Image 1 (spheres, rainbow, N blue to C red):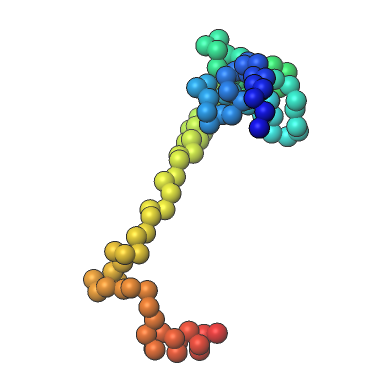
Image 2: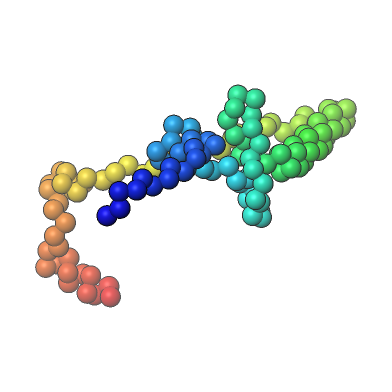
Length: 132
C-alpha cells in the first residue's frame, strides 16, 4: 500500500453529496422536479433558504396557470351570484387514507374465536380442488 495521502474533495455546496448522511434535507437533490419533462434547471430557493420543488421558470409558469384558473373561478362565481343562482359548495379536499393495518399471523383467530394457524384441512383441500 502507498503511504501517500489521497486528495480530499472540496466540500459539496449543500453539505454531503449523500442525502442520507446530510444534515440538510435537500443536499445533492437540487434538480427541478417538473413532472412532464426532464428539466436540468436548479430548483429555486425560498425566502427561508429551503428549496422549492421547481426551478424559477416552471414556478412562474405554474403560478400563471394557477392565477388564470382562480380568475375564471371567481368570474364564474360572480356570474352565478348576479344571476341569482347559488354556486355549488366547494369540493371537499381529498383526505389521506390510512394504510391497511398490519395483520400479525401469530395472533390469527377465526371469526368464531378459534385459533387458525393457516393450515388447511382435508375438506379445505377437496373444496379447492373442485374449484380449480
